[in-house]
Image (cartoon, rainbow, N blue to C red; front, side, top):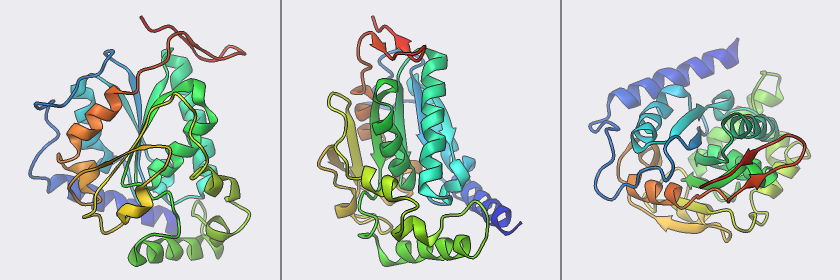
Length: 259
């Protein structure tokens, strides 16, 4: 199917980008904080046209810090935003309930959008949110980025399955999702937005969120995910995401007591 060809093409591009890295993920360097509690779960959420190969280096680095990462590439970041958030919300609940610990959400680009919306829906299951080059203003993107999104949306509108549609950008389909990108973030749940002024995919202004601790670092858009320049800021932000003591949900959901 055409959609499958698009995803396979994204996977090849991702594998090539990872293979071309000069610096591997390695272990923690000076200033990179280890997990406060060994094995704390992290959902690493990929963005637009992101497939598992692109998430591999970051996942290995998170493991070296002591976290238990789960890479999540829902529809390669190309699907309807509302469907993607619904799917991620279920992953958050399942992972937190299975481990007995609130999860940290780490989202790159559009994956940060999904993570922000899903985290707002499941505050008792989330220890904190960190986003990398995430646009919280859908219409303030760089022109090439908007063009790529529009091309996918047109393809989805004419019938290609598992792709966003034009109604996702402007209509009723994803109205809730769009509103959640700027909705107030739950009090007491750490939220850090990491961005770069050298990002030519998502302008820095689109990544500034009034509910977040906004942290500027050097690097390109993919460099926030694949490179090492942002790692110290990411490690510090994740370490601040301390689960609340005796986090509890009704109805047999998450119950976790942190010593």
